[in-house]
Length: 184
Image 1 (cartoon, one colour):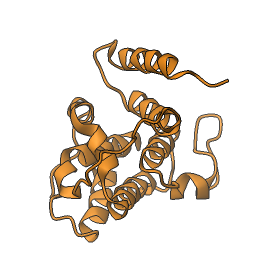
Image 2 (cartoon, helix red, strand yellow):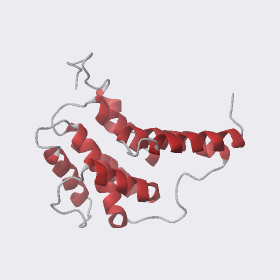
Image 3 (cartoon, one colour):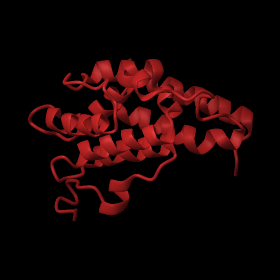
Image 4 (cartoon, helix red, strand yellow):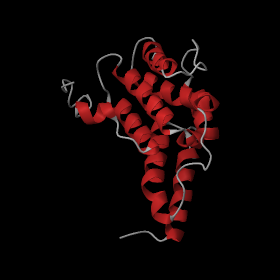
């Protein structure tokens, strides 16, 4: 069964209300919105990307936010700093000079950046979307393990970007308490 456009509009308003109901914007909530947007918006004739291409350096804060969420999901003792820096190296190799030595954003600052202008990420050129996804994948695999939170963020980002996530497809199930020795 397919939702009518009116039903979908009501559903989307409920989803948006759910996301902000507790006053916080969590990575899971962002991921949920992005998957729904990528899968359902086109069915109702709604655009999933801005009309104008956005330069990577123009969405630096939004990219830092997503990369920070992935890095912090790594559970590293350094607050994700090593994972974050590994991702930043990919962006620099891609040619972006905007990413310096600043640390990952705090959870609150990352949420604010994504809430304010996260939709601009979908406006990146294909090559830049691939670079951002690759940077997040490098951050996620930085310690040799792929945790469920990292895998979900990568899947959501890939879905939003219309790309295949390299890690989650190639590595199989993410490591979890029920699957502590998942093959990598």
